[in-house]
Length: 135
Image (cartoon, rainbow, N blue to C red; front, side):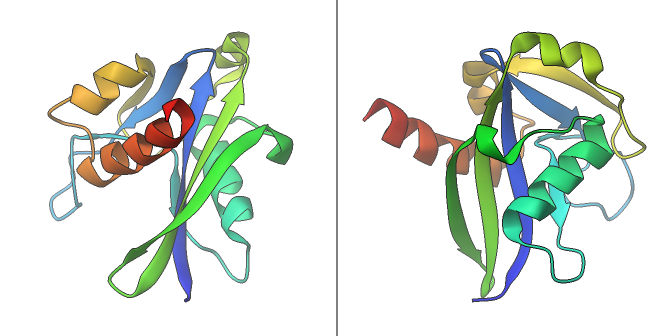
């Protein structure tokens, strides 16, 4: 199955790095809390896509070795990859917010999962990982 894009649930310490999406007309989930990630460029691999997008959006160079979980989810006949990575809390000092989104913040896992304005698909995908982690 062809892959279209990738997202990264990036834990800095025990908090998730989340991005408030822009309020642009026609943008899906405008004004919702999102995770770093986006569409594939060229022939890049799913992990290369997720890590590149994280660098573009948050200015962070997340090492591939810090990825602790990955899964492809089928959506409209295409694979969309979801990765989970962990880095030390003090990496947040290195964030250089890019030009996509309104702002970023650290949010607890529980807050993201319960937030009425978090992208639902990514709440669901994070729940899958948590279920396996805690299972």
